[in-house]
Image (cartoon, rainbow, N blue to C red):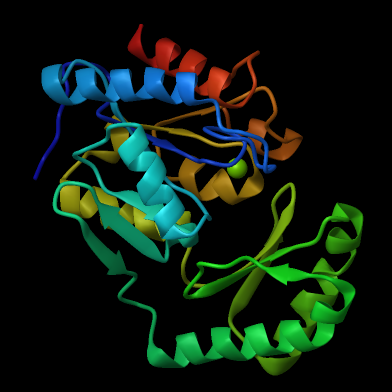
Length: 251
Ligand SMILES: [Mg+2]
């Protein structure tokens, strides 16, 4: 399955939180998503512009839903920071083959430890993750304060887990899995040339996208660190920024 367009790029790999939808629990801008759906229908029918696929830390079911809402029927999407790929062409899911039973056991042990340490203070483990843990607390400052402690606990036990913070969540991911390793799988199976890919992201987790693609852009709300990787920073926020970036890529 190869996909090539007449334009400069064949594929745009786009983060979700802070890009397609707010990272908070605010409503999703459905009208703007419909714009992206229109873009994708055109891309797939006429092959005159890049298809937009999604690459997110969210559980794969959430990514599948947004992929279907944005009418990408061709190119796989990525969930759980690279753990899962979902293929809209044949409805198949694939877990990263380098995740072993031992890795899954470490994640279960980490879940148990994190419940023990932080459930009493109201830290919630986001449901729907299968080989990683995402932590949420309404007090983001408190959440940020426990990041180094969690990283220490994992290090002391020799667990191969990377601890990082988005705007509102702590992500605990297996060290050898990230958005970039999944992008490698995606490009290998679709035959898409990395030189003909673009990416969009808003936090440092998206450096794994920026490192893989030929061109990287950010919406206005992106954090200062990730902007350094961007060829273009939109003056528009979140999904309006993504629509602006898509326009830049098509001209
Ligand atoms: Mg994001």
